[in-house]
Image (tube, rainbow, N blue to C red; front, side):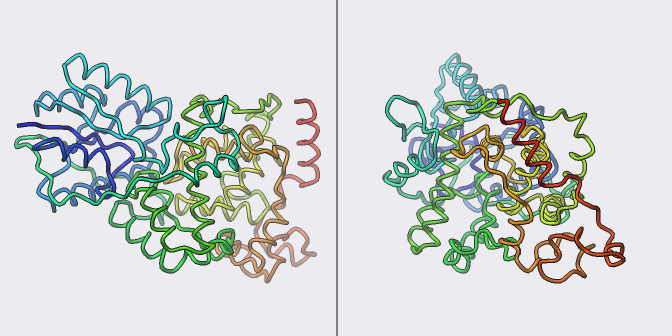
Length: 457
């Protein structure tokens, strides 16, 4: 009997899964395998919110496979050791998996290829599983990647995309394939109170609802903090419980300005992947413009703590940080504001903020998280690296009635309208009635410090 192994990584779904469909075409049976990789756990991936979402995805994937006559095989340990063990147990000739772009993913692929070839087995790696367009498919002349989004997007938008693959009707797994017990969300402690549910079923339900009721207004409302008018699909894209290519196809079929604006955001995700594929060190090192004058974590310790806890004295910043603590997710405009405040108003190294986000974000992704932080910090791909987002101006523009702030900063719920964005302007004794801190830094002082520091770079 001809057997293949399909190694699931960041592609925890059955719909539009090229490795799975390729294995089904060439094999009589296959082993759907997920390895809880010790090396990934050691990097800090297994924080509560992502671990909880992951176990939801695994349970849903196993349920989908069982509906089709199969089941998910889960192992724990070194991914290469575990894959080779499963290959030997099943006498499999090939292993299929999705291509990744991080330094870890590339090293994993190389280790696995060498180990399998030494046993006379073959590794087949598939593109356009985790991204819409393969990272190396769109390149400029005389370079291996685009460093600016706009020209990248022009080329990206002209690419002919492959068709969406349906989910298989049946999956046959060889008898006797042992599996570790599937973990449960109930066993994960420290999960954010309102963390969303993971898994392909939940992702497809959210996508359908979003396309029906949210997409049309996306262009006009995606920055509306109070309206919460974004898709909230980022975690599903990170874990691969939704196919980004299928999302693009379905959004384009819907049409309209909202569709165009939404697809552009998905192109940003691919843009970051092609940057990371060419420059994997951008996960930790400044991508474009190096800055050596960040304030030390020790000297800024109190301000960093206030930023993390949502008590900076700037209500929109604190609202966004508290949303992150409660939901394990943050509105995109909030991510821009909080990152700008840390890196440019407090002048703290972007890596401090990126680490904190990765501790809490359910969609925490080395590629998108790090490169978005670099974009805001002025060390990455932003063509205007010195731009500073004023949190008060931004709050009045994107939360004009203060609804978002009052939702997450209940201490200020009694303040009406735009007054909620500047509580320090209240006159005594009214100010004393609100248990909320004064700003930890004056915006003009922060801006002057930023300009002085960047003037030395």
